[in-house]
Amino acid sequence: RTVTVFRNQDGGESLLLKSLFQQECLQRGILFSGGHNLSFSHTVEDIDYTLRVYRTAMEIVADAVEQGDVDDRLDGPPVEPVFRRA
Image (cartoon, rainbow, N blue to C red; front, side):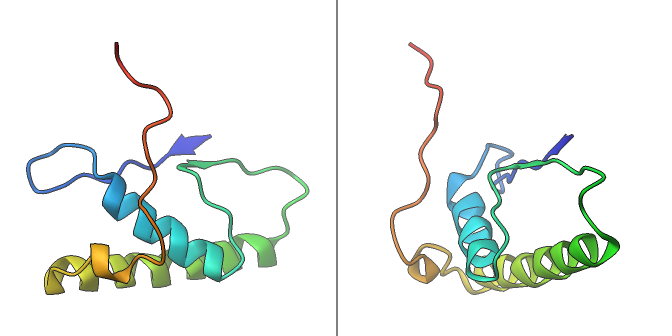
C-alpha cells in the first residue's frame, strides 16, 4: 500500500491539488482517495490503465498549477480533512 500526498509551494499538504487529481481520475473511471491498493485480482491491463489515468491527471494538475487556475478547474468544492486536530 502506498499513499500519495500533494504539497503546495510552501511544503504544506494541498487538498486543492488532491481534489483536482481525484476529480480527473474519477472522470476516467479510477477511484482515488490517496492510497493505492493492488491485489492479485488486478490484471496487467487494469494496472496499465490506472497508470495512464494517473499520468493524464498529473499533467492536468501540472498545467493548472502553471496557469494558476487549480480552483477554477474543480467541478465542486475541494475535499476536506477527514481527521482534524482538536
